Length: 582
Image (tube, rainbow, N blue to C red):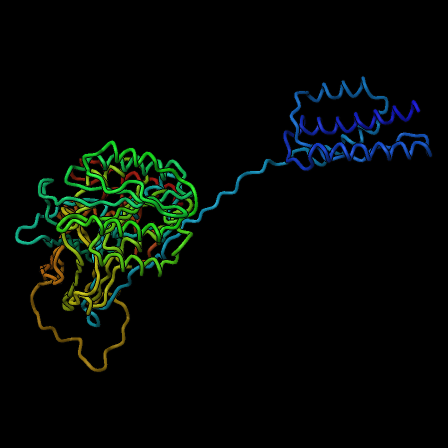
């Protein structure tokens, strides 16, 4: 009996050693069995030892038991010392410890898996078009700036942006330019011709639009409905936390003539703040403070509620606008882009405009946010920092929130005598059929108070080896020209005043010249560097032998006054991209 008790004691000590040794040498491991299960297993082993010892009268090594993750405050040396002083059968423990070490020594620590679920539209690039076959180029303007801020976020985080995130027109329109102020109409057209940096044989045509500026006293009252995504995906410092700080900044700009409401949505939607006078800042800020994240994302229901609230408090002649802030990760209700487009097209008929503010990373859905702004008579910005929020919501508040003209379209007619082929740089998802230009029912982009809009064309001279190969036409001649002037092209523009349904036509002629780069304006050289940067990021087939160093040099020599430092920031981004794009 004494030997049996000794064997029982040996088995229990072995088991304890295995447990403590696992914790001391390998660190905590995943819990595989609970304490009750372990005790039961130990009792089973005791019975086996008793049974075998009664027939063989010798100690049988116990099979190792998988350790339980427990906290132990003992070193390996202390464990070995305890084993030596309290055990008489050392061989079984040695076998068990060696077996355990092979099983658990140097086990790698599990790392969390990082998922990137960001989504973007395909990265299409406009091709060259032969002028003799199609002398007209028609497209809608675009005042969005989200792409540039998003590209900056990628580069600042040490990664190159995906090509689909790069929209050159939004990079161009992120910056303001010194375009002449309108005199007799709400919008003024300007233009400039110069050499093409990446294809010296070609020319670059810059077309600029400037919307009329208004003082704060001339601005109409605002009826603003914030539509805030408070779903679980927004629970991050660069999402809801940044959003609330941005809203507080905007609140400071509101006056007694303004009205503001807040609708929050997650799995369902609710009115957080009913229509409130803009001078009730404490009440508004309390509503903002009560925004907390959690749940799924039922965006479509929130959109319907926000527009309904905007219609109920509609201000005739005022600035009626829904401001949607989200990461675009919609997963409940209407989630497909086609259905969201149909929903937003229906809601825009109420005369309520839309501003889309994008936040976050990792699960950011740029394609969804872009389509909402495009189809909702709105604009789209990406907010990655408080400084960007200040730029969009404070410094450029009038152009962001106050629409000056609707359905703004451009149609360019090229002179085939001087232009063999042309290519619109950017605006790939804004192109229109030529017939849409005179169709007032066709939707197009909006332009805000004081906004500048820029478009670039790369043109190829007739007879150039770069001309696209097109078979001769069978039923008409391409050699007859009706104009022998030095006109390179004609710009035509249509727009609607905010409260009319009939468009107004403007036009401007661009004269050909042979300017060298040094005689062009700072704005021309700077937009050339921005466009070239976008082409390198997209890996465009049209980039030629363009290098980052050429862009850096051109941008440095065209910064101009740059009061806000935005152009200097671009130079730093080009430098970062050069380092990473190896």
